[in-house]
Amino acid sequence: MFNHAPDGYDCPFCRLGRGLDTSASSQEDIVYRDADVLAFVPSSRWPNNPGHVLVIPTAHYENVYDLPPALATPVQKVVQMVAIAFKEAYGCHGVSTRQHNEPAGQQDVWHYHQHVFPRYDGDDLYLLPRLESTPEERRPYVERLREALQRAGPEGMGVPMNNGLDCS
Image 1 (tube, rainbow, N blue to C red):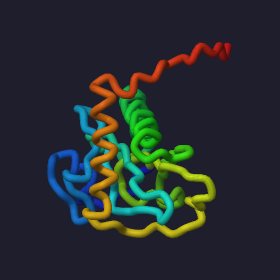
Image 2: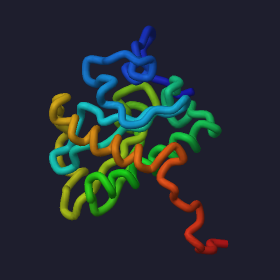
Image 3: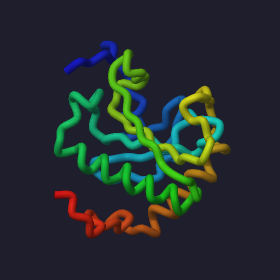
């Protein structure tokens, strides 16, 4: 629904999910993988927010309109795990997420993906241009995030679903 991928689209995120490298990313960039979700440090970066992560479903869904609700929860769980890992691994001051759909929404890869950014006071994330990074520049961020996620274990970051607050 509301799809824009051209006929014969060779999805780079599906390639990563199948264990193949792309022209921009490789298996070495992956920080988390399970049967449904993959998270990796992409080649794109912002000057004051290095080491951001893309979280994707391993199955191909172009955008939020196509993503099955049953898969949205596992994707969001990994977004949360990565956000918490950022706090440990990077010591960031906060975290931002964003997700784009269709050309007018600035989607540029035709596979659902959610950006997770480490944020720092005064970082000007939304004011600065996107840059490209080399595998060598990404490697320290990948390693730090893998370590933080592995320390959390298979159940994620152990965050309680309710911090004792009653929002009813």
